[in-house]
Length: 119
Image 1 (spheres, helix red, strand yellow):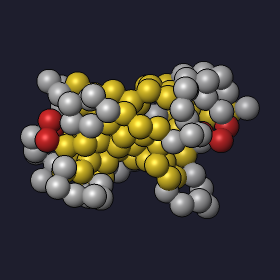
Image 2 (spheres, rainbow, N blue to C red):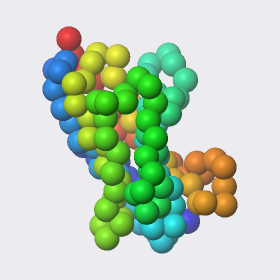
Image 3 (cartoon, rainbow, N blue to C red):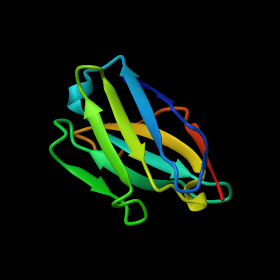
Image 4 (cartoon, rainbow, N blue to C red):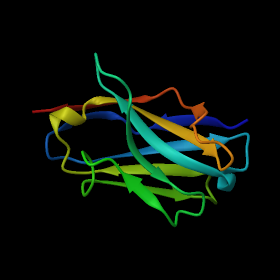
């Protein structure tokens, strides 16, 4: 069972940048595809980005493509989300998630980290 802990959230002005980190423990990190999701107040959780176990494949939602970058360091059991050109609409709780290659669903979740973008 993998455990996930996010960090790096905070308050930033529109146009600014933040880097989120997600540290994994309790499993073989390189066996998991990793993803970032977010949930804004009053809205459903939405997909942001995902990365394959070897980091060879990444995929982004249209709303963040070109502004956010997902990466991972398998030696440090950590996945990152580099966010730039932030907008107030990016304000949300950001969650890290993991799934095994045998699963279609992300079955492991962190507790989330708050990102607030002021205008």
